[in-house]
Length: 348
View 1 (spheres, helix red, strand yellow):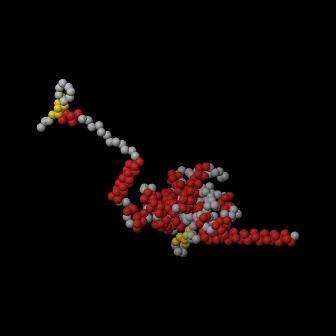
View 2 (cartoon, helix red, strand yellow):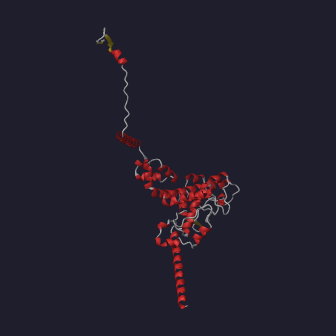
């Protein structure tokens, strides 16, 4: 049915317009208004958070698993894997931060049993009683004198104001710094590129920056058990690469640890528990890196029991006790000398 709309205007004639023509002539010019306000922005953010949580519940996460199962899964990873995992999201970061000590111990007990016994951490001075600080910081002690007069070129000397300077802690500090430095030069050793040598009495800036950087990693390991595990992981990789490099050298007939392809792929130090060449002395120069295969200090092979014997962890306590006793003996000697001088002065 056709309807017509008649518009009568004060004009000489009548204009007739059909409804169909009127609808075609209308143009919709409405637009969505852009709403900008702090309140709407807060509402929008809340909606986004709810949507993200809903998506997380829908897809699932490893953190939704039972704690025991999560712990077993993460305990099979490498320390470097956990560091990467901690950067994926805040939830993982917080979880790994809370469980760092337990996870690091689990990983070390699984992957780096032997290496961990060879590379224990030095002790911070703040962990010791304040009454023995002066004895450990005595500038006349032979350890500190040697450390300052004959420092290693490739190892930064420890700070007596920060670390314990007993013989055990000094050796631990030097060994861990060597772990980082030895790992740094692995690419040069693999490619056959010479390591820059430093002339006696010279202190180039690049070497100072490198040794400071190496020391910063060791200091991080003092505060973080996961960083300590990372240093052990790096050293295992360095030794695996070194053994493979020396094995390819047909002219090198020296005794070495037997390492199979399975040992290399397992990424554990189980093969280092076998009989092999001992390493007791610290490489005092980078020139020794070329033939260095395995550096596992603080242990010796017991031929009767056919196993490695490791330096006990309480050796640090024994050394500190010795330092305190020597300091007390020196103090008594000093007091006796002063009393003798006073007696001689009275007699005169």
